Amino acid sequence: MSAQQPVLELDRLREQLQGLGLLHAAEALDEEIAEAVRKERPGHERVQRLVETETRQRDERRVRTGLRLSNLPGGMTMGNFDFGFQPGIDRSQGRDPRHLRFRARAHQPSPAGATRSGQNPPRRCPRGQGH
Image 1 (tube, rainbow, N blue to C red):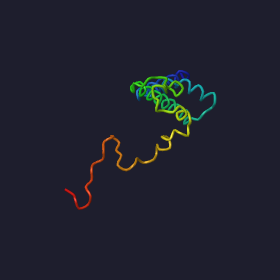
Image 2: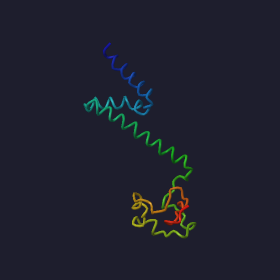
Image 3: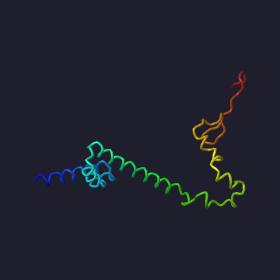
Image 4: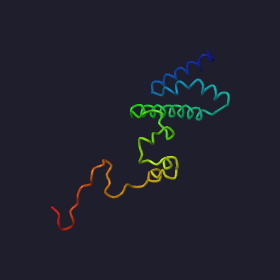
C-alpha cells in the first residue's frame, strides 16, 4: 500500500494546484518530480521550478493575449517596413540603434506642461491677475 500512497498524494497535489488555478504547474508536476528524483533536488527547489513554470506560461499567455487584442498586424519588422509609404522616415535612422533615442528617454520625466492625455495643460493666470 505504500507504493500506492505517493501516487495518491501526487494526484491530490495536482488537484490542489488545479483548484488554485495553477494549471501549468499541475501539468508539469510529473515531469518536475521525476527530474527532482533523478537529480536529487531538495523540496524547495521543486516548488520553485513549478512556480517558475507557471509564471513563465502566464507571462507568455499575457503577451499573446495582449498582441491579439491590440489588433496589430503580425510579423511586422524593420526588414519588411514600407519606407515608400512613409517618405519622411530615413531608412538609415530606422536601422541604426544610435538613432533610437526613445529608449534613452524612456525613464526621463515628461517635459513641463505635457500631459498624458494629450490635452493642453490648464491655463494659469499671472500673479495678481487671478480670478
